[in-house]
Length: 544
Image (tube, rainbow, N blue to C red):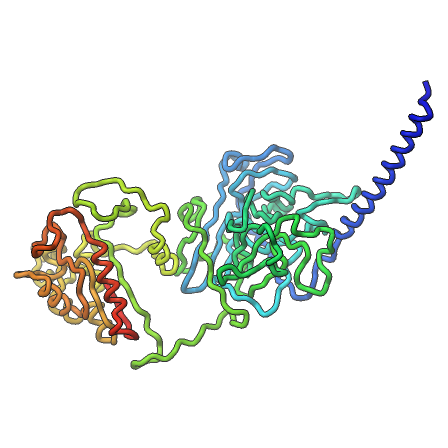
């Protein structure tokens, strides 16, 4: 049976519409593909960093599997788990931030190509205090431009064949057509390097408060903003006076534009970065196998499978120098009075008493000898954490003696307690006794051979607050205790415990019933009095 004329008419009409639609879509597709087949360099001012060839074990994956769960599915050919390893160090003296990783992601992924990812041992050195440059630097179209907080490198927005890696639309005859680069979890190169093109950098749903990693100029990278209009052409802006980058959502990037117009260092496919706004001359990308961490570096963040403990605070924001400041220059210190023009630091030495390793946090009151569980504060110990991050954390520093008074003697004198004048002249069976009753600051240990006496002789104002336990008293009174301790080089002594509280005979009005172990508020109050004494403004101080 032949189709009716009316039906034939409808079929012809539909065919005509289909053909027209195909031509229109093909024209748009051609424009998109044409836009994605771009020149691969926008200027002659490009900053390019080579990948590393420090390869370890490889994951035994097969293309086309469903999502591979971390860490259960991250197995090598011997069925051994390959964990994500990343250590982020903060190095205040050498002014570096160092990221050491094996380049293996720490989240679920899908293997979209035949390239089996391997451990690539990265050691990336960034400036701790990144500097805004007077001119922009072009990022490479491909290759490393940043490092995610999980230690996986971030690459430029273009695939090796010239197409857009994030918003993929390959031509019908384009082979290979790389489609797996567009997802947040990343993919591997032919050289087995796992990396991200997607702006979410390994995070599934980041927002503008999500810390994602670092650009290779040292500035931090954060998640996308709902409105990206405030970002500069490099994807950066100042937040609370500090410069940082924000990645862009796909809808905030016009993939139909040329990759770049040839007149600027900034590219148009600025998913992660449009360009570098900071100085990159102090950045190094190296193999980690023979890389040595500088001695001043402290762990800032870790995955728990490297050398740093798991977790830690979000890597701290680095201060930003002005656009005209050299990356190595320092502001000149103002001259100070005294025999040298070198500015002297103020010093605070804090020695916790009888603190167990990882001891539970217990605020006063806490009766001696009674153990109780107290919940650690929700916000941690931010002031102590600031001291750790902004100072020098020594991971292998040990006390010279495991007892409170004798270890305090070693801190103040720099000597082994067995060398104390109070004990070495009165040995028992020919051996100097190291005990609290025998180890005291006497003779030259008190008069000159100690830190406060030395600092005082060099123009410092010295203070002691807290527990002492280094002087023998016959007839004790609080004023007498202050006067005796001042003889050992201190200008200020207050908030004083000359022994353990339960061994002290305080006058009426002092707590002696064992209702607390140490009055931290009192000690803190007197320490602040010493530090903020208006009568000594401009005089360098050291507080114990």
